[in-house]
Image (tube, rainbow, N blue to C red):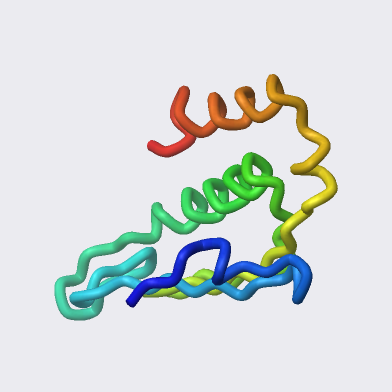
Length: 105
């Protein structure tokens, strides 16, 4: 059974987290698929740019990351002080960055 987010993240225990996400069914993040010959190399910079953009929006500091052909690892630090000091207007601006323009495209 899935855990609620507040039960998974405890800033009292640690503000540092290691997250992993992987592709399924032989999908590729970037690189060349040897079986089909398709190249996904154009995605490498896009993935890095989006990762860094999203970290700023969610008040995270990226400590280290590694992007492989079918998965990636990110170690990040949650900047609780910065997030707690945002005004309501700043929170709205952060969400506006996320859902406007081409950030997610």
